[in-house]
Image (cartoon, rainbow, N blue to C red; front, side, top):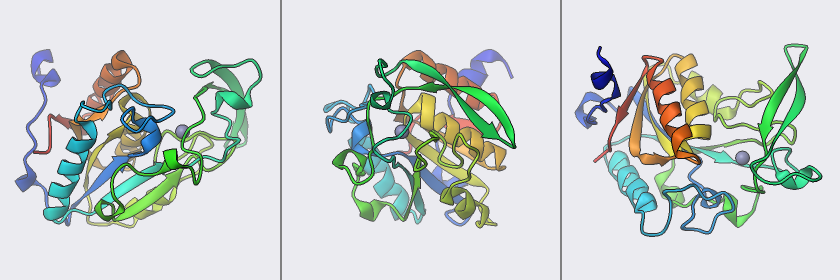
Length: 236
Ligand SMILES: [Zn+2]
């Protein structure tokens, strides 16, 4: 495949997918990640007037009408979560720090980006910006105080989420339609872990947005480079 064709997006064709063999995974459709709702970690591209939320709702309504089951991840942090800059003296949002974790009985250093307080359990910002009737099952992530979880499938401490066991139980499902926020963090991490689980991924380009535009471009290229991810411009 030449570079031009590898960069070109595919058109989404609903008729190639059966609801029996695919699921929709929307990553973190929460108020704190949208500028339209005044979220503490509003992602560029989610401003009022951007049409982002409206596109998400329209796409989900369509997918549900086609019979697809919709799964949502939900960032759901305790108020003293280690990813919050407020928990680290003299640090501010978007600084990075080095932390130590133990994985497979090995201590290792890892870099943590510090965020504004966001998606605190029970807060308004943690609420979905879509109505619950559009979501069939929701799965919390980032619930452990000491570990972030950009991925909806496993956290930075290596603990698998309820979404992991749910997906694993779906023996007939081979493909996941994935979109949500943000391209360069939680969408990217969720897609890569889903690829590791063996799924084919259809990523919907007009229903994702990045914290940093160049990070979003890089994430899309890395996802495509797995050979298991196709990027479609839109659902409709
Ligand atoms: Zn978070």
